[in-house]
Image 1 (cartoon, rainbow, N blue to C red):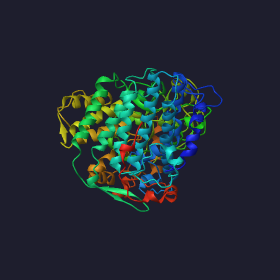
Image 2: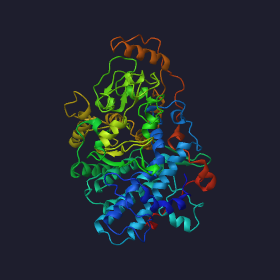
Image 3: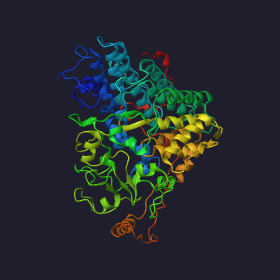
Image 4: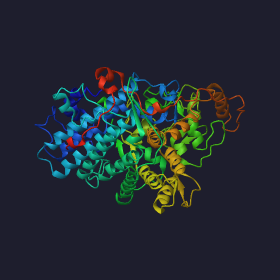
Length: 592
């Protein structure tokens, strides 16, 4: 978990502001050396001091964000990955990087917050807004940690821990303590943040923090210390038993979500695919995003295209995702079939999430007249040389998180990309999520709801993308919302955390669903042969699929233990107390 590398992190927190590349609202200071005695002197410096919290500390979380959120959940096939087969250990590099990144966010956000609190010269409004941004990022880091690792230490002020020489003797806190701490932190952030981002550039405002707090309450509603058993040892984890969710927490989630929906002034984007184009980075729908840049600081950029795009997709020789792709199970959820010539095209979100045989895109390869999935696979773009084959065993490839080629980056983001570097923002909380949070909170444990606002918001999300869905439903069920969340947020790093939230109160339901998923692939060579012949016929002749088999062996070995990720081995060695049962944390000791 790298929670003990916080001293060096804190020392470079101020330096990072000097070197972070700038874009849009990211106006960086020009000082050669920055410290609290010569910085935070005016509004511009305060904003600059917070800018890097929107990217650099999160950099090493990107791969874990996707592997945990999408591969572990069954939305994405990643051949040979322990995230696919539930064989993850504390030695996994991506898990270690993910954990270290989350603790870095906690330390950086805390350090900048304390520096802002002690600053003079800036207006009170801007100073408070920046402090509120710090606390929101801190809370989000802990929200990821508790849903990933379960019980972790609450380190409110990392520097105090170092100075008191207690870094190797911290205990884990109970999960209920951590959720209460996240709520405390967000409530303070809401108190400090302005109602609206006055810069109009995508910074966190009060309603962004309220949206996150609504999601926290929806998650917390299912957790019960009385129905949870902590298991200590070389792999610390929890087991939960089925129970009713906390009504007060559900009501609070609905109240906050409704406040955001009705009073923030934000609206859903008219076209789903626009949300993920660079010229919509800071659109109304995107509440909290990692605001990546391309510049001199390595850790400020988006690198997801490298992991997810097919070899040759851009000009930088940095793509290696051709052997992976959106899962057969996710295709099933969209009503699609990789063995069929015909695309259903009834839900716009499918094509905006995964590309399949016959799909074409006008927003990729804008310098080449558009992008054709099979044309690319089989070498039809002289400007972009692929491997000459369709290599994904699922017959699908990613769309979300891709910017395209350099011409697309220039068109939508205003400047060139670089090797393993784009300015495409990663959206980690969207308004449509808040709509569905309200729906689920109103359903609660009743199974269905006829609440007029829940029906309308569910309709708004689904109507935007689904052809023919033109009437507000008379009622919606928990199953309706559960599936809608999957289709709406697929491949956005969120699905596993839906399963964790469900596991808290319906463990057998979460386990059973994952066990029945189609997480494996087809015979890739046979699939490639079928698609190549189809492409070479000019999309007129679809061959036989009789010899294309799906690998139905090796169902995922998911158990109660699967819903708590292992702690990094190096941290457990450094502090064996992390293997012990958690202790009650006295939240009255916390001050902001």
